[in-house]
Amino acid sequence: MFWQKIKKPIIGLAPMDGVTDKPARQIQCNVAKPDVLFTEFISAEGFIRNPAVFKKTLAFDVAQRPIVAQVFGYSSEAIYEAVKIISKMGFDGIDINMGCPARKILFRGGGGALIGNYKQADKILKKAAEAIKESKTNLPLSVKTRIGQKTSIAKEWCQFLSDYPLSAIIMHGRLLSQGLSGEVCWNEIKNAAKIAKDKNIVFVGNGGIKTLEEAIKKTEENRIDGVLIGQAAMGNPWVFKKNYKPSKEELFETIKIHAESAENFYGKKGFNKVLRHFSWYPRGFKNCKQLKIMLLKSKSASEVGKILAEFSAISD
Image (cartoon, rainbow, N blue to C red; front, side):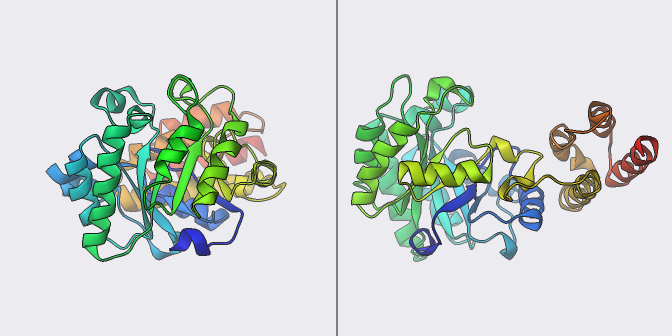
């Protein structure tokens, strides 16, 4: 039950689909290791149809522990089958996503569509807990969610979730209708946290955190056990360090290592999966936009190395 044992405040890396894959997590751990990490989310329905498709998504190494597998779905039976298998794959916990704002997931009734859908959420949580029990792994179960869909129901929703055998609740302080932008309602998070903590459930906030200092401040102000940092970590693994800005040389070396790691993991045919990271890394120096354009055209790690070497020679 690592959620209870882990040091507080917990400052973790939020799960982000298409972002927090194994190579990205490797880079993050090399630069500044968060207290907890998550996989990209896994479709329960997709997984039970074809588990092999998710082999890369579920890959991790011991340096990334504690690591939690995040699962989403709309069918309680699919959640049960998927969690029962994934629980035996060596993860430190299982998280059920009840907050994703992606339309294709909401349309089927998964992710954030489960907020306030007490009947279906009840079925899913019971089946997830049952699957873990049957797997005999005793893994902690958590839920990552939001304060509401169009209006906040943070307290009622947290009260409902707290009645299940959860080790942690992670609550994003934006409404589902806000997506990933707009004001984060930390007061709603604070109020919900009181309910969870009364049930001895670890409570973690999420949304809009831009620095490690801000993360720590939010835990203190809102009396919560921790926060997850998401968008601010994209192209900036140094966000988990205090008052730290990498030199251009360190940035370039990190880009190079990330390119090599992605190529080793996905192969040259899957190298394009790392390109979005190259649109985030270059910032805060002369001609960074030009470097971004050059990197986005790369097709291999060796090309990235050449681009960085040439850019360094030109800019020096």
